[in-house]
Amino acid sequence: MINIQKYVRAQSLEEAYTLNQKKKNRILAGMLWTRMESGNVPVAIDLCDLGLDKIEENEEEFSIGAMVTLRQLQMHESFENYCDGIVAKAVKDIIGVQFRNLATVGGSIWGRFGFSDVLTAFMALDTYVELYKGGVIPLEQFARMQYDRDLLVRVIVKKKPGVFSYQAMRVQKTDFPILTCGVSRMDGVCKAVIGARPGKAVCIHDDRHLLDGEVTEKKAEAFAEYVAEQVTTGSNMRGSAEYRTHLVKILTGRGVMELGGVRA
Image (tube, rainbow, N blue to C red):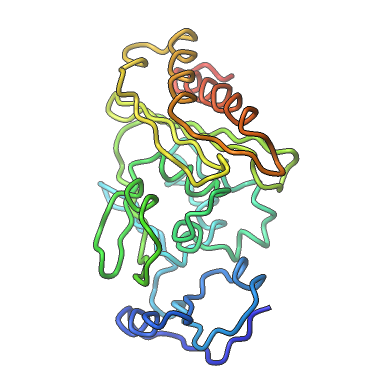
């Protein structure tokens, strides 16, 4: 259990950023993982008064505030229609509705957790993050960065024309995934995102143009083999590295076939 010594509802991003520069101070998101930690937090910083709990849409993009919950995402019809429902599919097995009503997009993306369905799904889209000081950068770049004291303000998903698929393997529903896989084709360019390796998600682009033209089973198998060669896997209590590499091939192949209109 954590011991919060002072609770502050920030009235501006600048106030939140300034308070967060002290190493032991913490930004509060959904508090679902933070509450299971131990130790003292001198100042807990809540962003709930900053209007970051909205999903906004225009002709070019979706702008998703850091305090938007996973349940809001799951139930947002326009967003899910655009991304072929992959985000709703990615979050549906995250514990339960009560949990998803609290867990936030900002906390899920900022954490860059190895087990994150959310990170994998968003990396399969044309996604950017807006940092208070760091500006707007691609999510793929953000996922590789070291943790710092900046603030994640919102997640931006560009409405690039495409088709998308999401796959995950679990021992049972609501469990942490053994492996996650997002596959997309946007403007004719394909990529696969592999998470829960058990490391955080990585993106593999079809640099060899294995999926150019019409999708076939043979092409899907070739791309799946290529992705498995590029992705480093590890072992933990949920599965061995060898099993995860096998799953990379299976889930990537299924995802590619879905892109081609064949539901595996």
